[in-house]
Image (tube, rainbow, N blue to C red):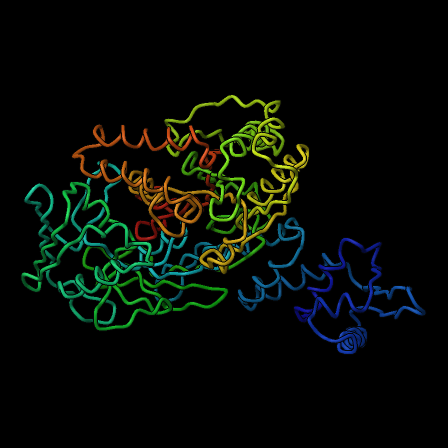
Length: 576
């Protein structure tokens, strides 16, 4: 088996290869391998000595070097895969999959690969599910997690005080088996189950709940705004706790269902790589390339049906979602594409803190007419998503745009072709849309520099978002779309809190505050409508399209629930 640096070189040279010969400059390979020219030359001579290729150094200034390979790249890949499969070397296979190699080359061994990925039964009747993720997990700290994929894991690793049932749209027992509200929904008393054990063995008490809430109430956390009305928390016993609010809030228990408020032990400092809580799964291993979850046998509600779930990183996976792998064989009938339509919304946001033009209504309106969603979806051949004019799909409708107004609006805003900076997240589809917007703006004399922010490593870095004029990103609702709507406006990591001016945010917060005083949705909904009308009338940000999510699931995997936060509820999976 050749070393991985060799395959990295071959993938790099593949596009320029003619026959079995590829021309290159030595410094190109040195840069690719992050080594000196001298080291790169030694490596090439070693490959030649091993009869992998023939190395012909370039003679004279400007003449390229050449490599003549003895086997086709596809033949070498086939040999590599078969040897890795025999050794069950997942790490080597996954490293290979990071390279720019045609996916159809894997089709001849796709069934063998699916024996390693996807469903797998170990000796001892251990049911293991191996999943592929397209990017590494970022922060798994519930006080700071705002990304959809990470948020879906929180409710697998821990349990909140109560849970939200998506079928009945009601709050149900979880850690608390009963609760009551008094004094116009300002006093809430929760009765805690006995015998709930954390992963490290200690029994949960109300002291842990107090500790969790005190941490979550601190400013700078994503949970601060949920709990800012709390005036006092009183421990009535080890299994009874009372929370008093400054204001009436019949909606209070809905916040407590969120994964960001899973209960953590007070006696163990939080470590997101160990993750001590009460959840149905616990973390067995976490590296840059892999996350392994194991079933927690002592879970107080129900043990998961699967024993072990492994997430493996393949960065250039074609489908940018968590998926059971089906490498190189898209027509394989053993896999079903579960498409969830309209489960989120893509939004273009102006940065009022940096972009001086954003304060001019005419500038924002110009971009409203410029960002023609139906045209963008058509030109990007995206027929499965639909135009959005609201956070809620059922309230969206087609809106008329008039490109003829753009020039006069820009003139009214005193915009004269100044360069602008545009930030987007590192999703493949988002990058294509971002480039479309850059090209579209250029036709109207608006030069835009596109900045791609890595969602795993840079999303939470405030400095990445400061010196930009606008951004684009999707917001994916949780199982409770009302809470998701409120979180969109209140979460410090999301676009409104990051980019809107204080005056506009205050008006939105006042309407949300009034909504939270209402007993039911029919009373709250008019306030939601007022918020969205305020946003649309002033073009504070622009709704683009509602999103579609794909999950490729093996037909033998069954589940009671379709999704959780847009992802599989791992606790409810089993193998047929």
